[in-house]
Amino acid sequence: MLLPGESHFTTADARGFSGVDTWVFDLDNTLYPSDARVWPQVDERITLYVMRLYGLDAISARALQKHFYHRYGTTLKALMVEEGVDPHDFLDFAHDIDHSTIKLDESLGTAIEHLPGRKLILTNGSRRHAERVAEKLGILNHFEDVFDIAAADFVPKPDRSTYERFLLRHGVDPRRSALFEDIARNLVVPHDLGMATVLVVPPTPDPFRERFEQEAVKEPHIDHITNDLAAFLKRCVLPVVPPEPGAS
Image (cartoon, rainbow, N blue to C red; front, top):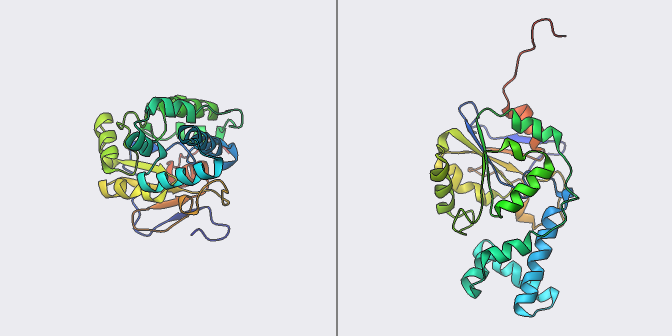
């Protein structure tokens, strides 16, 4: 856990960023803060989809949704396996949300812009969702591409094949890349493949997410932990640029 007043943590034997030329970011709850209220809306839409599919009340649908999540990794994967649900129909429904709650994040945009090398988004969501959210944050134009759940053949993280498919498609050397992700278990395989790993947690508990999804756990597969992504990039990642001659 992060200590009181602590925003960043780095293990003693952490992989650094000096040789990194590819920067990979998860989307949901990583590139935006919890007060953007993006994920609660998506979560509610998924519950509604389950309600309508099975003819359940909200409480029963919610319980079934969480059962699916823990068993399959995503509700979508469960519904594809058990009900043959069209994944595109599900994603269009789940991501039909109000984006007005997302604020432009100039600090994050500046930090990502100055990262040396390529920048990619790796998400269990859809490309359209990722692009709309990133555009509202003001960071979309800093990214080369989005690798979404469709590109992963609808096999979600943390399945090893998804990371391997991503690395192959984009020609990424894992030993020269870093992954920023909000769920600790999603960093196990990337670390095993050689990536530097950064766990992004909320500064205060998010009541709309399960506890294990936001814990600042210090485990061997996690090199760095932060609850302020923009500040972490500026303080711990970006190279120090010497002042120009004559600058005060």
